[in-house]
Image 1 (cartoon, rainbow, N blue to C red):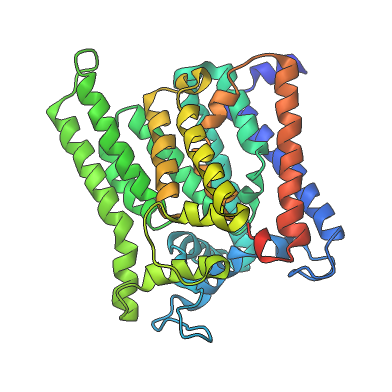
Image 2: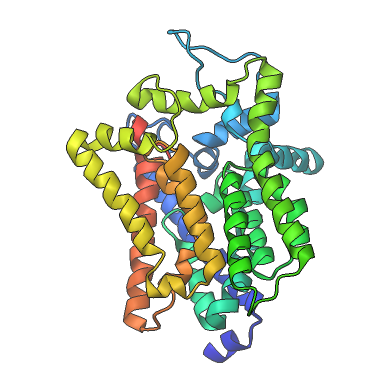
Length: 391
């Protein structure tokens, strides 16, 4: 058996791991359906399809069916209510186009697209990590990628799976210095899921590193132009959806007011002040004094994390991505249960987790990952009965 496994091509191994991991996740969803709480938003004994199309999947389905509102909905207090402008159009658009061609229902095609994108991301992740870690460690990192606590996102109607595919490809292009291709990829990323502003910061930091190290890693003028063009394009594309929402609705602040509507349930109506939301979140969840301590500890811990020896093994580019994306989250996001989902793009850190080769360690990591995956599925899809269980 081991010899047959060793003779399989790298992509064959990853495909097998991915398929098996998705079967395990499906079993977890099935159990969560049987344990459904009486007050669950999904009702008694929902099907796997119902669970897969739940939560934000409903928003993507709405966008695919009706598009975006030209007039912003208001709540009873006259404030902008939660609406479709918070979600980008690429994922629902692709799913809708494929569902029209194949005559498959939107929820079915949404899961198929997510599954395919997840497999593509796993394959590219192996190619990305093997550059620094070698084949064996890269393969174990892919195993962790497939069974990660939030790997259930690979089979639900969320845009995360597609974004991870695009992001992994973008990081691979960056690491291999194929900057020109990024110019075609960045706009697609920008309209798939928020986060491309962090990629703009990454390109700026990457250019600085290339300039500083040009004595041992020659930097051509053409590369400078392409990196600057990519960073500028990512910055423009990152703000483009705000402009589009403002033009379509006639309200310049349409996108920002829509995003702020989600945090209003926690802290009421508050303006967007960069880096203030985490302080507000810490105070909301833990109280004034303890909240500040928790937020400070998280920030310091995030910085220290980037300098740990296993993380340093990933190379400057992947570490800069993780740092850029974490800084982006600190700047704009209000921490609540969705923070675990929003942390998924720092998945290159799984490469650092895969560095040790001790079998007991690796077995323990696999068990912990699967246990945390079940906890997440049970709370988000099994209970699904409170505002704090939003995936």
